Image (cartoon, rainbow, N blue to C red):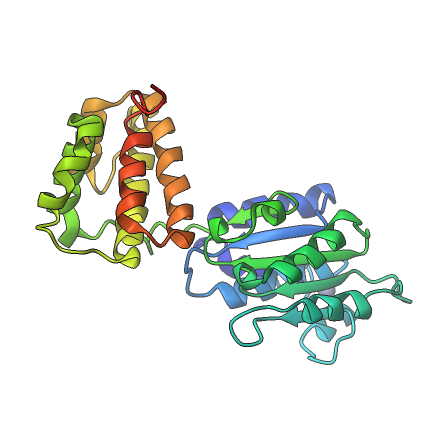
Length: 295
Ligand SMILES: [Zn+2]
C-alpha cells in the first residue's frame, strides 16, 4: 500500500496524496526511480491507489473493495504491464496496449498500463505511444517507469507528469572519490575553458569509460544541487560540506543553478554520446559559460 512509502519516499507520497484529495489525475505519469530498490512495489502501490475508487493508501481507507482484490490477479483485464522484449520495447507491444484498451470499459473502471524500463522504448514504439498520449482517454492512465528521466525521449517526458523518487541516498558522493572530485571542481572552476588542458594530467593519462564519467557527473550534480540549496538556506547542512563549500567559494545561487543545468544536460548526453573526450571538452566550455565559443 502507498502508505508504506510515506517515510522512504516522502515527496512522492505527499504529491500523490494530493492527486486523490483534489481528484486530479494525469493521463500519464513518468516515475523516475533513480535506482530506488523497492520501486516495483511502489509502482504497484501507486497503481492500486489509482485503480481503487477510494484511492487505497492504507488499510483504513480500503484494500478491500472489488478492484483492490482484482489488481492482484494477473488476469485483470483493466491492467496491463509491459517490459522490454529482449533489449527493447517494440512497437507491437505498444500496439497490444491499444488493442486491449480500444473499447471503453463496461464497468466504467479506470484502466492502467504500466511500461517498465520506458527508456527501452525503441523509436517506432515511442512514436506509437506518443500518438496514444496525444489522444488521452479519461479512463486510461499510463505509468511509465524509468531509472533516469534523461534516458527517456524528451517528447515522451513532456507528455507525462513526472514523479521523481528520491535517490539521494543511492547516489551518494562516493567518499573514495572525494579527493578527485575536489581537484576536478578546482580545475573546472578556476581554469575555466583552459581546464581542457589540465584534465589529462588529472586523470593521470588514464582512459575513463562512459560509465565512470556518468558516476562522476551524478556526484557532481549532487554537490552542485546541495551548494544551490545551501546558498539560499542559511541553516542547510550538507553531508558533503567540504565539497559544497568549495563550490560556494566560486559561485552565486544563479551560477549554481546554471551549472547544475549544464551538469544535468551532460548526464543525459553521456547516455548517448560515445566520444567521451569530446564530450568532456564540450562540457568544460559549456560549464565555464562558453565565453569564447561564439567568437
Ligand atoms: Zn479499494
